[in-house]
Image 1 (tube, one colour):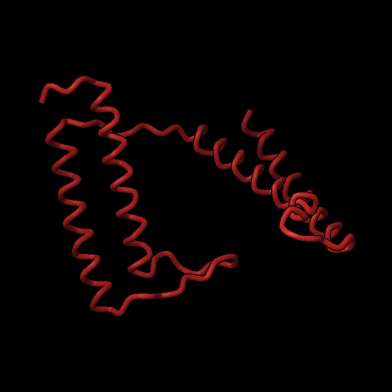
Image 2 (cartoon, one colour):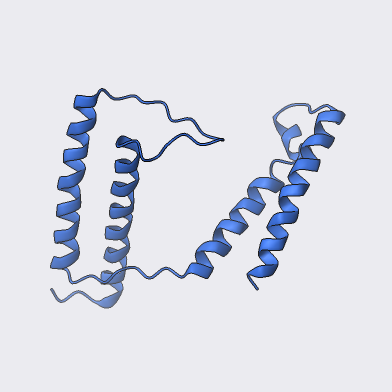
Length: 136
């Protein structure tokens, strides 16, 4: 196909996002995305439904691969440093937004709790600063 390079780049990202979503859904449905300290996964599907969805995801993967090959797309290049810096920046924002002063936007925070929250958040932010220093 005679697609311009800018269209192929966009379609490459489309295909990569499709593949990433398939992988994520498969991890959830196969139990590989397990509970963590901060997250509990609540199962919602019976095994028969789960298997049907997994088969459909297989079909989606095959079609996505055909799409990728038909249009002669290239893999999306992701740079390790950019991915890490992006996550660190995201964490910084989440942590700052969780300080007591910001929490007050959702309702009053008593002074003692606010101090404890800020102490913990500041501890996390200090480590994020150390990580940031290593990324320079």
